[in-house]
Image 1: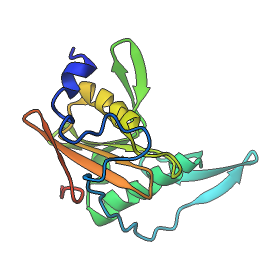
Image 2: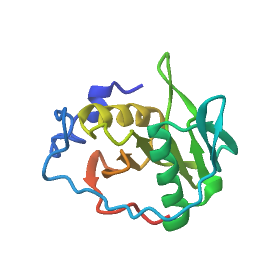
Image 3: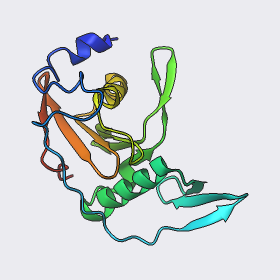
Image 4: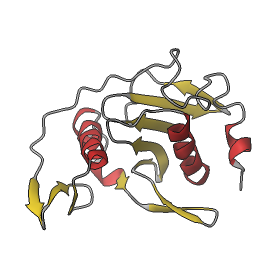
Amino acid sequence: MLLFSQYTKGIFEKLNWLNYKKSPPQTSLMIKINYPHYNFRIKEEDGREVIFDDSRKQWVRLTPEEWVRQNILQYIVQVKKYPASLIAVEKEISLGELKKRFDILVYKEAKPWMIIECKEMNVPLNGPVLKQILNYNIALQAAYLIITNGTETYGFALENGTAQPLEQLPDF
């Protein structure tokens, strides 16, 4: 298994993302997301708000991060036309002996194609967030990495050991 430092060496050095603790470098391209209108099903259950997740076909606790996740899911399904049947939400993966859960994974041709890491709106998208998704990608080997807090979204295409910033989410 690749070590994290081996995996990231060179991939993000030119972009200088991994050193940022507060916000991404000025040279990064932010992806503009126009979220579609959607009538989310929200209710109160045991004194907590829950939202129905169409992908998981279940009610889940409505946290600030879940709100971001549900909105980006609607964007990729309604606007980008990613097939809902090829999207996995909050599934467990093994990173060595650690068990972690990715937020969203889109499959294409039966292989992981895109990982989307969601954070709540007040969480800055910085080096630690990028390291988190890169760790997931050691196991998943997706071609695209997306990080979002609902307000800001950044994406990268990984190819031949380099990372290219995305101006928009790729078409399926």
